[in-house]
Length: 435
Image (cartoon, rainbow, N blue to C red; front, side, top):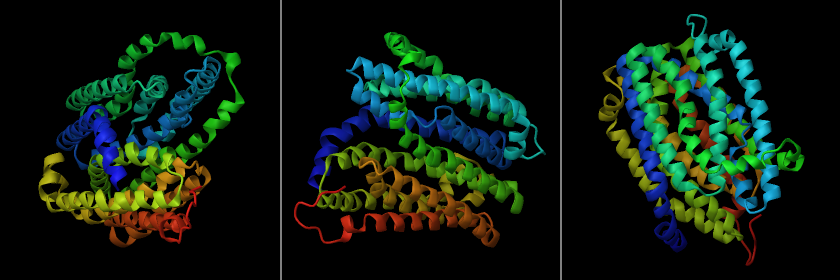
């Protein structure tokens, strides 16, 4: 555990304090203010509709860039000093994402009515919002590709500044549109705000405009595409399937219980997202690079249980505090109309605690490039989330969705423990390495 404390003191705290914390705090404040505006001007029903649109937007955005973001970041970091390989990486990623974005935008624009019925039902007519999203999507895609390039070149300061300014700009636009046009304004803001960051990212692109000379059609390589494949497959599950399953669950709540109850569930998900940002940032900054370094099963075991002993008790106490303060948190973030959300806290918090327990171990899939294991386990999670939620919603109403959340992640945790059982609990002979 000494290595963890040393790493925190010398490395992680610096990164979190100087780079990550400011972005996270800005995101949380922006999210809370947006949630408050939605609660005051739109209400519970609007919260449910916006939740569906946000999930759909998240899935479509991932489709537009083919889930290449992490693959581009890691590849550029490796080949940034090799002009030939850098050109092949940029060319392959740029043109494939360009064609993908055009196709996704085209399909979204000309199927807006159908998508509207899936997201909002035929009782609402927000097809024009889907068309606006389709027109804004290319700007988002260019922005994310620019982010991946800057991230690959370790231009963290520029990324920090762009993220913070983008969050503030998005917040101002969102609040203004909600104030002017209520639910319509909120829906338009949801699809436009992520693309507005492109205006700021242009500064970063201009600063590295020489990179444009590396993008050439004859430098597209199948070998580069093949290296992106595992990241695209993982994104297909985590960044596309999970949001789409959330839409299915929310629609089931709307049809079987009511739209207000779906709004309560969306509000609970928002609160969950806010506090999980802190713990997942610590895990990402420490666990992934640390797991990539270690070779022995003994070290892997020490790191996992060390993290459990040092960080998880603090996280657990934080969740207990959130549970105790829920009568204050709900009206603070939303309004008195959202009081029934308090009934959802227990199972959501319990599920999130198990989720973090799982994440700590599951990052070994990525560190050791166990992509197939990761994808299979995540597919199981997605299926169980839907099945358990639908079954329990029939029994317990909207509370069944958060109970299903807990049960799904508990089973997810169990499977991950089985896969890494020998490393975590088995007898390890001297010199055994972790594959």
